[in-house]
Image (cartoon, rainbow, N blue to C red; front, side, top):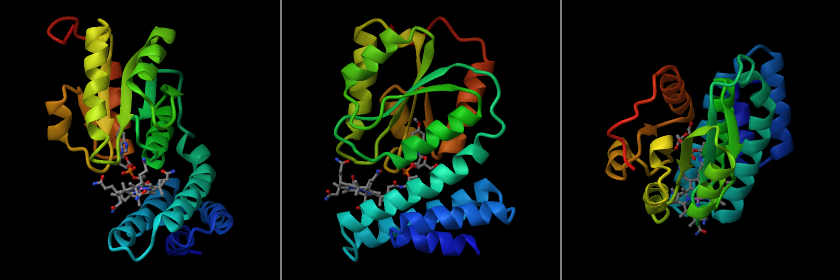
Amino acid sequence: MTCRDLSEAVEEGAANLARERATALLAEGVEAEEVLRFGLLDAMERVGQRFKTSEIFVPEVLLAARAMQAGLSVIEPRLRRNAIGSRGTLLLGTVEGDLHSLGKNLVRIFAKSAGFTVIDLGVDVAPGVFLDAAKRHPEATVVGMSALLTTTMPIMRTVIERFEAEGLRSRFRFIVGGAPVSERYASEIGADGFGPDAATAADQLKAWASEQRPTAGRGA
Ligand code: B1M
């Protein structure tokens, strides 16, 4: 069994097979991070390319996403193995109008393994829902937003603006990510951090958690 076998199962949208192959790879001693990278993420990369060139369509992409999620659920406990006590609370969601969940789910897994409590608000999360969650969870200090569509990226700015308008901006740090999002865009919309991938996002969270929070010069 190789990661390539798993990757093919994901690409074909065979969820049960993906689950079986991910389980077999772990049983053979392959590291969960390797399974993630070469068995799951590579497959979705190819699926994206084939979707772009109209070789496959939404139903096939959806099946592949389900198969990836099946594989992810197998490796998740291994990725979380090193989790320690809570380092803080993250409010996480894919922004309004956007149904892409896999990247957001990966951020959840990596943040949890880094010791954070994650309030996962799901996908298609309206700015008001982020705000309500901020009010309901006074312990939360970070908001993480994922966007996969160029049309939904601007919602991330709206969320930050709404937090500013409600006087909540200074309590939070904002981290954003998703395939079309760049460091430059993150900075343009006033986010504090950008995650090119979920592991780097978790590193950023850890760095923030170990810092003394600045109290001046950061928004309302
Ligand atoms: Co959609 N889709 N999709 N899709 N889809 C893309 C994003 C697209 C690039 C495909 C393409 O054309 N090549 C394209 C967007 C083009 C654009 O905006 N310019 C696209 C489109 C057009 C659409 C629809 C409009 C298609 C249609 O209906 N005609 C539609 C929109 C629906 C909606 O959201 N309203 C749609 C639907 C879907 C499915 C539902 C079928 C399915 C999603 C299923 C699901 O998520 N449960 C789907 C999928 C799977 C994809 C592709 C193929 C794969 C995305 C993915 O999950 N990648 C994608 C092509 C691509 O991205 N190459 C595509 C794996 C995932 C782990 O990566 O989410 O990028 P990603 O996360 C990465 C990093 O970005 C980062 O960490 C992860 C790696 O560790 N990251 C963060 C992500 N969020 C982060 C947050 C952080 C930090 C890092 O901090 C908080």
